[in-house]
Image (tube, rainbow, N blue to C red; front, top):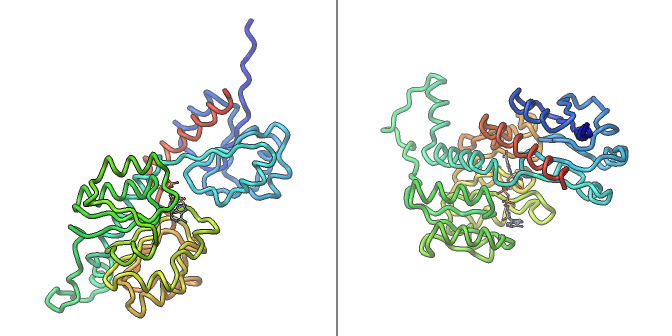
Length: 321
Ligand code: NAD
């Protein structure tokens, strides 16, 4: 009889639905154990699937000898000790692009809501206030014909640019000194030079944009990328959207920018401390022209399922070598 094929021992450290589990079980000796207290994955696993889980340098030290791969659900690998894993010959694979449209849709939603002050007006009506447009202050602005500025023109930035251009005829200005040649090609296939500009400095983009949306990873080079100087360069009427990572925008400077009117509003899905609470961000999250969400950018049902399947496919390919 032919040998029973070796099914790699894979642990998933976050909850998945039954159909994803069944798919994983076809390929792996599979355990889905979202309880972080369960230690056995470190000793037993040949690979793990992680979503927002942390893999620390001390975790890496105790990994068993058969451990080969980390499959990251999503893009950002800042919670994973990539350097230490690499030193042990372990590969970290993420799923770029799979969640891009979900995050872009959230950035678009925040832009639309802030532009017309929808959330604030709704909150006032709910609280029993009689709100009429005649009282003024409820005018807002449209996105049609405006300029979208992107910090980062990768997968998510590209999807958002496509939505802004397709829906509103917006111009797109990208600041991304490291843009991959394949993305440069995608942008030039999508937009003509009259609607697409790539600028060499962040300041140039900030000065001309009506909505500035951030889509870069959190790196030493992007930490505090948007601080007081940058916020002061933005138009007073502009919106800042951060669905990337906390730490990229300096939140103290952002609060001052909003309170002193350097910019008009901010949509924040990524905070330096998560989830955002009034203990840490009282004045910022209660500001009338701030919209906050607790890192839900990629958390649509469609994306969770598709991304988990993509992580499994990457692992299957990697084990096949
Ligand atoms: P991507 O890798 O496709 O694009 C990132 C782009 O950032 C690249 O083009 C890169 O060249 C550029 N970049 C890197 N350093 C830069 C710098 N200093 N200045 C300007 N540009 C720089 O990634 P993506 O899929 O578009 O995701 C972007 C980020 O969004 C991720 O790194 C992650 O942190 C975040 N994210 C958040 C959520 C959420 O739930 N809110 C979900 C997915 C991703």
